[in-house]
Amino acid sequence: MQSSNGPELRGSTINLDNITAKTDLSNRHTKIVCTLGPACWEVDQLEKLIECGMSVARFNFSHGDHGGHQACLDRLRQAAANKNSHVAVMLDTKGPEIRSGFFANGAKKVCLAKGESIILTTDYAFKGDKFKLACSYPAICTSVTVGQSILCADGSLVLTVLSIDEAAGEVTCRIENNAEIGERKNMNLPGVVVDLPTLTEKDISDIADWGCKNKVDFIAASFVRKATDVHKIREVLDNNGGSTTKIICKIENLEGLENYHEILAATDGIMVARGDLGMEIPPEKVFLAQKMMIREANIVGKFVITATQMLESMITNPRPTRAECSDVANAVLDGTDCVMLSGETANGEHFEAAVTIMARTCCEAESSINFDSLYQAVRNSTIRKYGHLSTSESIASSAVKTAIDVMAKAIIVCSESGNTASQIAKFRPGMKVIVITTKAHTGTQSFGVLKGVTSKVIASFDDETKAINDVITELRTTGVANSGEPIVVVHGAVAKKGATNTMKIEYA
Image (tube, rainbow, N blue to C red):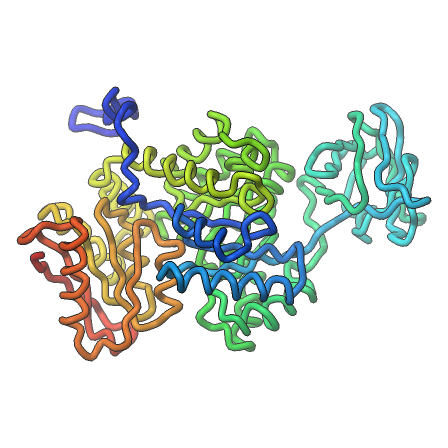
């Protein structure tokens, strides 16, 4: 933190009153992504998720089939209609993966002892035991080196490579810890550039035959490692009627981090996927990667989702650990646009409580942010990186600065594509931002992931003034703005997509 007298310690805005005050949930900025699953996928349960704060519903295509996901999507859209909510839909691809194989004699698990040796074979038809396991990655012998670690079952089993027999397709490893594992467990090769396609045949089918057909808002692409991966996904979308769908790149390994800037330039959004990332790089380095990725995305104005194990203990427990709440809060303070729940909602006994405590934690973190200083920090960082603001950024920056100066109660944005709304959100206004649009996908995408943004979808912009006045009236009746208080309006020739926007001040 910087003051006129120089640097100061962070937290100067926090005092006992903040700690003892009731949580204000009325103006939460950070959005919440919820993974749908058996624990929460009935209509009444989905309505509860929406009430508690879900803005994006994640469909995890590592599990289930198209028919099951379709039934769940139909229920979600019914729940969203019932609640008049613009909840967005995310398809999360399975992506490339390396897995261990099946066991012999119908065994469901094997017990492995520390210090013993085990062989990994590329013969995936081999039925394994505690002495030898199949591995689905055909190139493992040419990818690993002696002394390297191999992680299995989310890191619960650590192996060290002792020798490699390329002719036999076998890697002999030392078992570093006692472990009990089941069939088909995930395997990670830290630091290895894996020779697997980012988009598998299944992923392409899921995107084309389900995602585009259902006009999903976002594709979250697993294990994106370079910009060409993004171009390939965009090609699949464009060829199947999905040109309005936005791409979220999940950064899950070192190669993705090394190519982060080129990926960021090509994608619409980023997911900090800390689960696999924490196996591919040292776990004590993950928070550094998180901060780096969020900051760079903030500067270029692209949304970021922070994901994995945020409230993991709530899969079984009714309350999170204090460390988990701190993790959520710190992601908000880092600048994330969204936080994500996985098993907590998909399979958790306390899915409603998980979303509620996440929303409350986000609000408490935001209450300690000085949004005026944050605006200036985003602006300064952008200029420092690029030397100037683009025309659209300049107008968005001016709108937010004006809203700060006149103490506006809200910013109204008329936007067809959602680009203007995204630019406004980049500069982190502390007041509400309402997007008025005629495009349903702009409404759901803006509400889904843009920090502090809500949406209103209208039939036509033929009477733009009436649409704006209707929103101002609603702001007045809901107590957001009192009569006579200023509201900043950003709009332009919205019938001309991409036209330069103008700004004015209206009064409630």
